[in-house]
Amino acid sequence: MVGGYPVITLCGSTRFKDAFEQANKRLTLEGNIVISVGLYGHSGDAEVWEGMDEDTLTATKVMLDDMHKRKIDLADEIFVINVGGYIGSSTRSEIAYAQSQGKPVRYLEPPAQT
Image 1 (cartoon, rainbow, N blue to C red):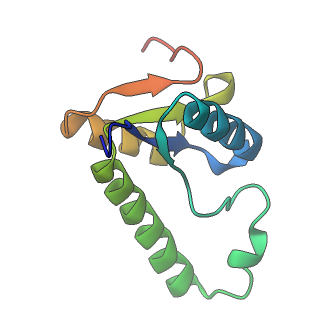
Image 2: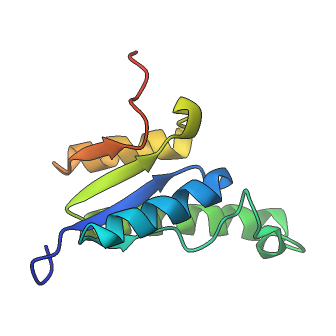
């Protein structure tokens, strides 16, 4: 908590930009500090990747994945944007990391039982 406000980091596929924005608004109005993604690489920020060579692209993706884990470090919990139940490999990694750090995990939609 910061100043009495719980801190929540949003996790999920950036293809769900609208769901990220809706969750951010709702959680903020509920009295939370919300940390989100810095860009939507799968829905609307394609210019970020244009002209990047493979090495730079790979290094950038590694940096962004690591940076998101640092955002999880700052949070009291994570909120997973899993529209239609979809959870990709990066998000699975973020969930596992949050759990390994003792962070509660909440979901937009109930997760599929595996």
